[in-house]
Amino acid sequence: MSQPMSIKNAILLLVVVAICTTFSMRIFQGLDEMMGEQYWVVDTAQGDHGWYFIGLLPHVKLVPKEVVKAANTDADPNNNYIIYSQSGDFAGNNVYGICFGIPFIMFLIWFAFILGFPDKVDPYLLPRRIFTVTVIMVCSIVANLFLMRIAADFARDPMARIANVAGNHASLLFHNAGIWFAILFSALGTHTHAAREIAAPDSRAWQSQADEKFSWMFTLLAAVTVLEVFLVKSRLALPDAAVDYSVWLIWVVIFMRMFGFSPRYWVKRTRGIAIMLVGTAATLVFFYMLERLTGNLGAGFASPILSKALGPENQNIGLSAMISIYLIFWMEFAAAIRMNGPVKKVVVHHGLKP
Image 1 (cartoon, rainbow, N blue to C red):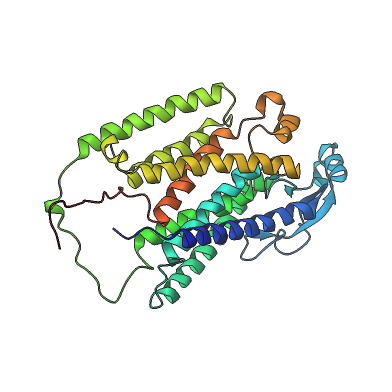
Image 2: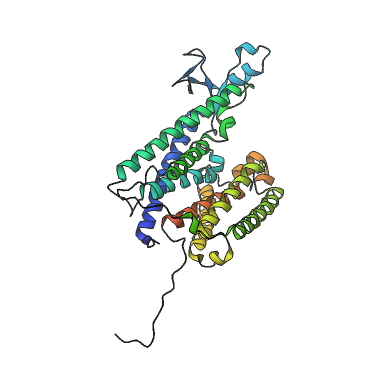
């Protein structure tokens, strides 16, 4: 097992990932701010039905909301506008803490596990790894534009907002695709080929532990299922439980991959589990304070913004997603700094003199 990353490098990795995430979110926030109290509507007067960039990206124009609503609610359907998006469809500032978490995970995977930043950067492999990240970015963008185009074609209601139909907030959609393609390319091993390859292990020598793995996996799945039901009933989770629950399922899979498949392994990896729990708690406090300081960047829980928009009973509906997303981030961070393995005990030999 590799030696744990130094505290200096761990902090450097965290800072770089946080800066890149913040910058990425600022791009989407800028799109929201650009719209203000206007809609982006599809400009059907330009190009082939208002679409360009191989048919994926629409020509859009800004039109005041009152004008659009008046046209779309009158008796003449021929003057209806096709709404592409409005402010809030991209950055999701009302649940900023949740929207920040997905790119946070994405950039951690890109930097730590693909590039090997900061202390495992191989000059021989670096060009190939940079190329891999570039391909991931391009695939993510094209895939998202394709999904948005499909959503636009199937949206029959002229008041439907394409960005929301495609994935709640465009920032979540784009960064989720970045994670998906990063995992895909990592599984394919496109960035890890070295000059000296080693033979694959002989699977015939493996010891079967399937029964124990499955029993504890289903135990954890049952636990998060009960937890999700409790959170939804208590209005501490998104009403669309499928979205919220799926993140908890991902957490179970990653937890077992990171820390082993039964408590006898977990008790040996207390350092990594502590990073996961303490990091998540600190992140929740950070975004709670950030919302109080800014007034417009919602934490997703205990939120005056959500309370005003959805009612006081829904001020905590983002708590479940916040916890599960940041549990995943800090698990991945513990692995990135190589502190998710078992704690090594120092063996002292007595009675021997040099």
